[in-house]
Image (cartoon, rainbow, N blue to C red; front, side):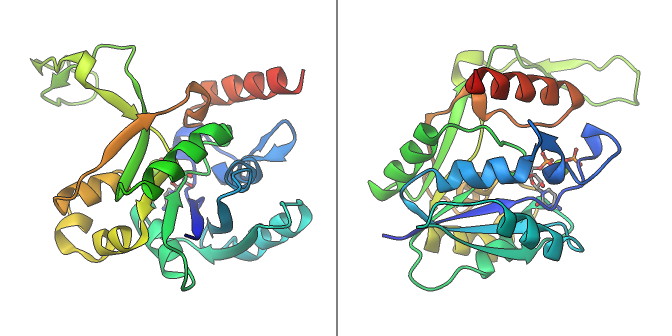
Length: 237
Ligand code: CTP
Ligand code: MG
């Protein structure tokens, strides 16, 4: 088995606010993307990291990776990304060399995922699951609403049973063939899937959940940066 990690890092980070592309914003003085790459490379299973860079930023990202040491065993590639996360992931998958049998897809925006979570996902794929997602139970109750104009009260349609819901993180792990099939299937690619596992579900293939980790949260809004800095400071203490 050879395992590669594809890291979509081509987003602008609109919700984080103005500034550099999100993956290049720093945490503890180091770009978020470098943290994410190191988090994947920390797993002994991962022999290759494919970083999907902002479309015009591939040379800059390549330089960044050249500057930051990775373990001897880990190769890396940089490819330019696309308009959507799904498109960026597809471009990353297309760059995978022969011989890779297991693929992790990991958001650059989840820089602090612990290696134990990465290893647990890899192990579940190697044990035979074609698609594996780390996830946590929800703390908030979730309501389904009927969307209205901004600011208008929205009628509640339903309250799904919270105990049955999971908030999904990355890295998501896949049998390579399955992931490629999903990204080539018209049904799976259409209607805006927000994660690769959702695309595999649309093929009718099984997806399983393993325990996620609270430090694998996604840096999305400014408050998430405050939390990420605090987690990093605690680790370094
Ligand atoms: N991503 C990507 N290519 C895109 C859009 C997103 O590679 N065209 C990546 C982001 O870089 C990020 C991951 O997908 O690592 C998860 O996306 P998200 O958290 O939504 O990041 P952004 O799209 O950058 O943020 P926003 O939606 O706030 O603009
Ligand atoms: Mg986005």
